[in-house]
Length: 405
Image: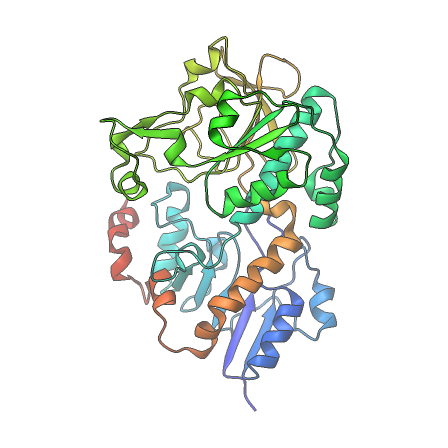
């Protein structure tokens, strides 16, 4: 019987390379059993966290030419020279916010009449995302913050996450370290990313405390505190905080983060930031005598955004730099004790690619694969479809100017 739908798994072409996959070999086997009229193919790759042989062992064809596939699944942005006109692509495109570095890729997508479905905009009716790597960014980002603290103080030595076999080894390593009494760790954010960061810290000897206690008390154990925008911002007019109002009117708020800078040792930034919302602090604030933060693990990684020491993204191989608050320039990490150690890797889930990929694939299977493979009406897929047949969809019509630049 002729297969009616063919799905291709793309090799990742972005630099620096990403080792993640949208579906693992075992997940593809499960999908083939459930959908016998769907056939899967995998492009060969020598960097993928699941090897070609792992797919071949399970009788999943590996081939370079995916031209006969209907649907193509990747993770990160696709090299524009590799697009196959008229196909349906799913990946994290990073174009809906008019990112300048992806404009040429997006123009090629439209010119080639590709149907682009962006994972980031696969949401429920209430706007909640259904597939994401955020938890893994938080897990690895917080781990890197702790690792930086160990190197900086010469107290413990955690091996890099990407050298760990899997998440179990990461957790086991954390249980071996002993954070000093009184150490204070702060996590900003209340979503998946912050949740992942708190997962990591929960595997240490740090105890969770309230924002009030974090600010006002001394402890004989290491502690961690998680705060949201209700804790680090306030309305200019003094009215009570409202999250809905904060989202709709971010310019009506100012930062109230300053007290935390006087008591925090490790700051894990895992929040979502709107460019119109207040910055956490200014560069000159980092020169105050009572400034205490020595490590900033900026998981959110908004360059030149709410955290002035985040001046560039770092890489998995070289995750840290020293930020000199006097010159406001980058220096070699762990040399000048007056500098703040910054971690700003922008593809953190890539440090645990097998675990992160398996989790992502389960989300795909649980939420969108049935709609995608059966071809029926799907509000979820429609909300994430940015363009098709050479035209922007109505929801993303605002990108017309971006295309014409």
